[in-house]
Length: 161
Image 1 (cartoon, rainbow, N blue to C red):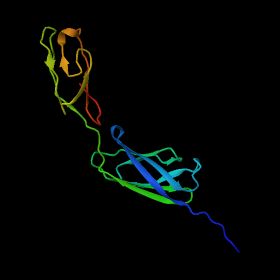
Image 2: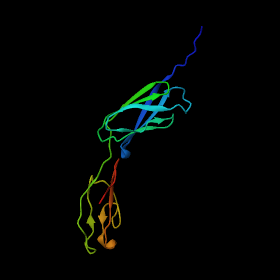
Image 3: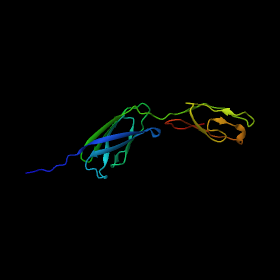
Image 4: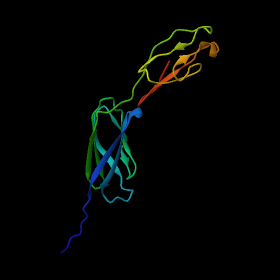
């Protein structure tokens, strides 16, 4: 008697960091027949401080682990419908740069232009009366309260004041 069987390929897991969102995008190939409709699922992951964003995904799509912080090492285990397992390890996660904006006092319209500062220093400023380099011109705005934002270069989130 002959027995027919299918040998499944190993699951290959690919991880892609999504720095601004504090996430790792997870994709996989292999395992059960790859017809584009057999779902993969994130079986387990570390660190425990993170959570699963998208637990299951099809071939060609992505799952995600969210809530990662700068410096986190991470492991993701993916399983298909047939119980085939694939594991990937990554890290340390490079989290977004969060700027610190130096506070400023009130300005009078006749005050000279003022250079706004932030740490890190490299980035782009925006807001009324502010150039992209952070030069604020009080005479260019009407009296009132204004918000300005700063977006550091690289993987970052903006800061406002």
